[in-house]
Image 1 (cartoon, one colour):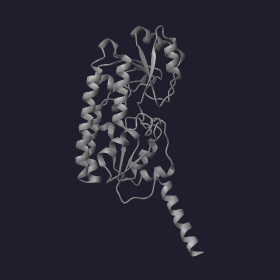
Image 2 (tube, rainbow, N blue to C red):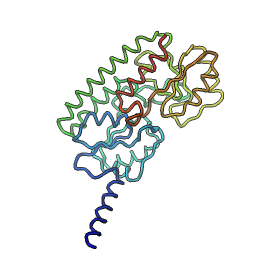
Image 3 (cartoon, rainbow, N blue to C red):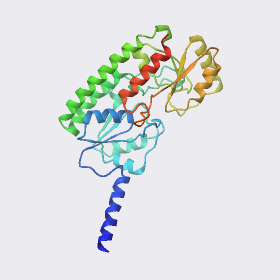
Image 4 (cartoon, rainbow, N blue to C red):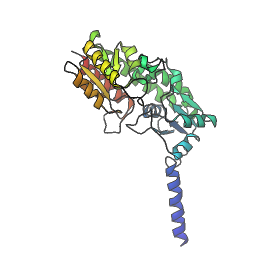
Length: 299
């Protein structure tokens, strides 16, 4: 009977620790809000630090939610890493609570050159989607590395140098790929305003987006869609892009309404996928998107 009770007690303890986001670890804990930043942080710290990413693959960063156990782990973290600039709309109360309880917090948006949304329907708000420009992600890595060294030790510097070199290679690849697209064809239409930083860096025009404003939580009106169809026709856009984290039904409807043949291509923009989904990490996501934009717009 005593043996049975001991086994039952052990199982209960394991269940409770599992509900808190995994079995307890002796390693320092860094909690990261989005899976894009979670992948970057994991590359910087290696195996010496536990990285807990809150956002699941394929989720929408504007609206995903977390459990009470995950919120509790946020408040016990050695470091909290967030995107900021208003991206994590459904998570802000938990971020504020953790910071108010003294959890050291790194906001990636504070390390980048923030751009406003170019669309008038966003009301001049700041654009949080800086990761579409790899140079901005390099700025985040440079600012985050010394902070992570305080958590994970000297090995972080070596990991960061290697990953920074990969980001530099990615930036060069994107520059070369987009150079193949004539200036007059560098026109982007998506179902959400997410490419402001990419457009600014690589000289693209943002013709429009199906969802107005700066959040996927908004909804387009009939007049919004009619205006966008007209803009697509005027710009001669050959391909419009649907994000993997949002339904593409309206995007396909726009393509059908255009007066010309318009293709629809899927991009991974606001979330990574699972291992088999095509964009399991940040570098892969950016390379897939670059090739799809190049092939969709180049003559």
